[in-house]
Amino acid sequence: MPIREATSDDGTTIVYRVSGPEAARPLVLLHGWAASLRCWGDEVLDSLSKEYRVVALDLRGHGYSGAPESGYDNPKNWAADVAAVLAAERITAGAVLLGWSYGGLVLCDYLAVDGTSAVAGIVFVGGITGIGRGQGGGRVGPAMREAIPGVYSEKPGVALRAFGAFGDANTGARDNVGAVAQNLFGISLSTPPRVREALFAREAGHDDLLRDLDVPALIVHGSADPVVEVSVAQHGAQLLRDVRVSIWEGTKHAPFVEDPARFVAEITTFVAGLDRSP
Amino acid sequence: MPIREATSDDGTTIVYRVSGPEAARPLVLLHGWAASLRCWGDEVLDSLSKEYRVVALDLRGHGYSGAPESGYDNPKNWAADVAAVLAAERITAGAVLLGWSYGGLVLCDYLAVDGTSAVAGIVFVGGITGIGRGQGGGRVGPAMREAIPGVYSEKPGVALRAFGAFGDANTGARDNVGAVAQNLFGISLSTPPRVREALFAREAGHDDLLRDLDVPALIVHGSADPVVEVSVAQHGAQLLRDVRVSIWEGTKHAPFVEDPARFVAEITTFVAGLDRSP
Image (spheres, rainbow over the protein chains, first blue to last red):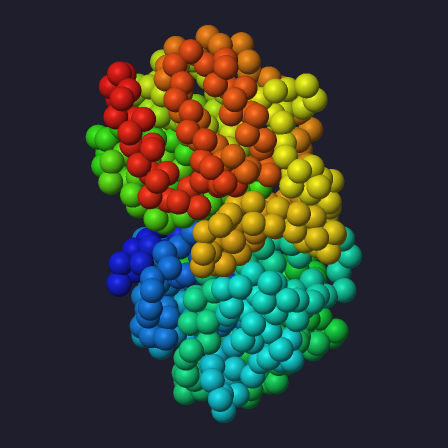
């Protein structure tokens, strides 16, 4: 998996990894709050890379990407980050964008600025499309509400306890995922506290964008997601014209962790039905 | 800081970041057990990059480098990882190699295979040069002894408690380093438990290598290091012919965290006195 970087409009370095056949359809993965490109896991990345040109980003402030002091509340920065990576990889058509959790909002930020000319379809995975009070596309669940504001703290003890509120939100009922849980927890802890806070200091909604979207969408959401409420999936489903909704009964916030094979299968089926060629 | 990768002899991808003037003397940073290239901190990297061509590796099994199932007990793999990065960066002379903690052992592994033809000097920072029973160059302190074997566990609760044994070993008396502590703790948690264990499943010593070393060495070690005993610094000082020893009174395991400015100054002074040109 080659590792590369692109420079966003404000100079921030966006690091990403690329895998899969060069000529295959691009699948761009956008992770969630306090995560990184390492969140997807080798099993999911390896499987997806057999079919697609997988481009997994580290969002700004996360992983090995740059972490500027400010600008996390500006949707144009998030859009420019995605656009910079697409440009660096010369992706101009047929891409599928997939956003997990906060990555769904970043995906919308990109579409709001750049449109869908490079895009064949989009996927929300436990994803949000808005943030702030009164945003139906941004309703967080009890685990997230309980974690805030402790997860913003620079004090290790406070932050550790606050992250504990997520419990098994990312691993759910799957067995033997202790190493996966430690990895995700570790990635969150190594995301700067100021970045964790800045991502929530935003008011945004993309209902109009979803209503007018001219490419198909897939929504995958766990019915028991305690981080992003499943009502967010229903909100999106009502707005989108061409949408397939897959609610996973009893699954929590990370379907790709709980059942990687099913996750890859659902993505593959969705992408197979897309019109626009890469 | 461009991010790049090199492929080691066994096919493992070694990710590294490069910064500083291309023509400057190379300074190669090797982090410790369960750390990553993010351990050094922006302040240290930025300062060092003003003087040197800084090349900071993710050791195999750590950060974004590949994490093969086995081979962590083979010194030739560690040597090949360093050699692969030097080759990728076309570094053939005048490099300074700096190893923190376990990175000191990796540094020795490299010298044992490749010699010093590319090297002008070496630096051990709280570094080990051996591992296993009876190795004077590998005596671990009480924090490390207490952490094992819990830090090998895949169970998040067990691992979290075990890492707690390190307490402030990396941050020491420095104020306002909560975010730094969380970063280092998070990096450790996101290092696979099997890798954490594999690094200690080794018997190795490099006393003969140190005795015969034909380039100058600097040893920086905290007098209160609870992870690697300060006796390891004394052990190295007795063996090495051309060595400068800097024991930091009251400092723990990560001098570059406790006093970045002093750390950079001591490196700079040492490197200024080296004969071999880059």
